[in-house]
Image 1 (cartoon, rainbow, N blue to C red):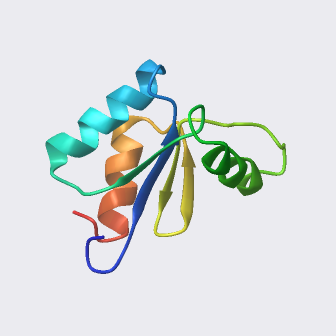
Image 2 (image 1 turned 135 degrees about the horizontal axis):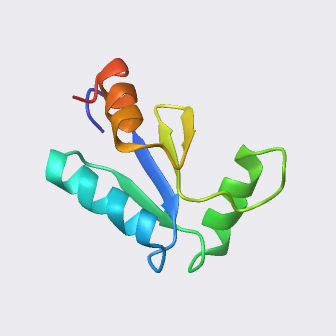
Length: 86
């Protein structure tokens, strides 16, 4: 979304870590797509297909194609900067 790049967050709204990441991105003013894997079967399938384990590994970010599963805030910031989102 920024510079033609996309931030996607796969998670579940009941998950406190997912809610943390939503707030984190909103505070940074970054546009993102949230895909609730518990409320949408297609989103769950997309997430399962990202990993060899066949499990719903959430929360997971896709930052312009780069997977990040449950990163610490400093690692997320580092990857957002590295990919030109901030």
